[in-house]
Length: 162
Image 1 (cartoon, helix red, strand yellow):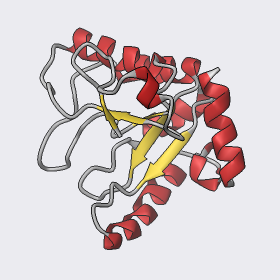
Image 2 (cartoon, rainbow, N blue to C red):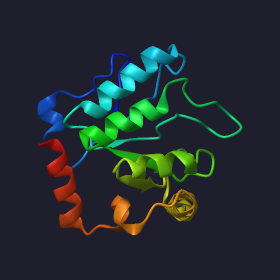
Image 3 (cartoon, rainbow, N blue to C red):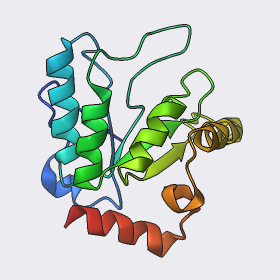
Image 4 (tube, rainbow, N blue to C red):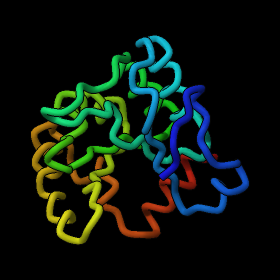
């Protein structure tokens, strides 16, 4: 996972990013940028050829922190155009991406990546919540990266980076 810096660049040099099988880029700081700057930041990140997945896209923590103030649909549209997948964070404290945005993203041809955000093995069980949200958002097996075999998954990432 690579941090998205305030200017939208990623926190690793391109030669390091190129050495990874795939890169999940996420915002971990500067949550309170004005909406236009936050939107621009995230669009620049998803357009980076080394960014394969936008992680916890709104940054929300349910009952703890509101999501970033930005034009999420513009970010999703930029991700779809760039071939960058959007993460559906299945942690029950996040459930970040809302099901309505799943439907919007898949309608644009964007891949969905269901991630547990597990910091210990037991957290992997949270994937079931992500599957439920993806289903509620009408995502099909053919739109979810987790449903691909390893070679097909790496092929999707390679094709997006070209």
